[in-house]
Length: 376
Image (cartoon, helix red, strand yellow):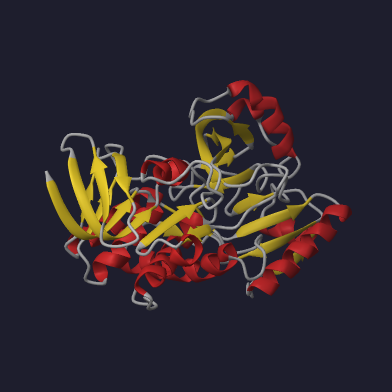
């Protein structure tokens, strides 16, 4: 089978679906191809489901810009499409006076990024808001929240299809050819092997972003293609009534935001993630870390009952910089970066990728069509 279309998006995670929706709603015939038999089975379904407010990123970075823009777009989308979410708020807790100074610097950086609703509260105010939380001080972020990530992805898929596009499952991209002239070409496997040509092509394959580019003919020794690293995190559930009504975070640590407490839209509490660098994608759960997790949680929740911690799930972040390099920005690579017209490749789309998905889609459409797309 052989056919052509306007746009192909590789990957039906939350970002790939958001990108596909943006192109379909711009009137372009759009295919979103997913190697698995369901949407969002990787990074998009194995995270904290947090709507971030933009506290941690470098001013002027894509993460900062897309997080702030994406948060507003996302709340509007969720409200208008009746996708379950809660604007529950978040506390970033300083355990002592030394950590309070770090907390102040986080607040200053967030302010430089354009976050305007943070409030620094003292220990007494913290106890009043969350009696179970111990700390010297905290930053209160009222615009942080949580979302049903699967509900969000289903809503994005529905709008792709309503606009005339399609999401094709169990359709791995096996090889292809990027063209500097004329259409790009993909060869897919799965139930219906095909050769598909498109004028525009987006690589939104998450953890496999580098591998996908190589399958499209990229050179493994090319400095243009970011490296592909995996940071694995474990999440533990905490059955029973939650002692918190908000998200509770410690100060960030190397490689992540620390073992934090999050709630799902049903009010179920979970803790995580830790950060473990791994060589390959493996979602197995190592339950030997219970005591280490418990010690980290007790820094802000001293009444933790460690016997209630139950193994939950794991997730893996797609990283493009190793642990010694610190956090890297999103890499949204289009013709200006690699010289290939009509091709955009997304790398290192980790947190706050869920929050930023609609803003990332705007960036991609603008990069490939050359005009801002602002319609919700």
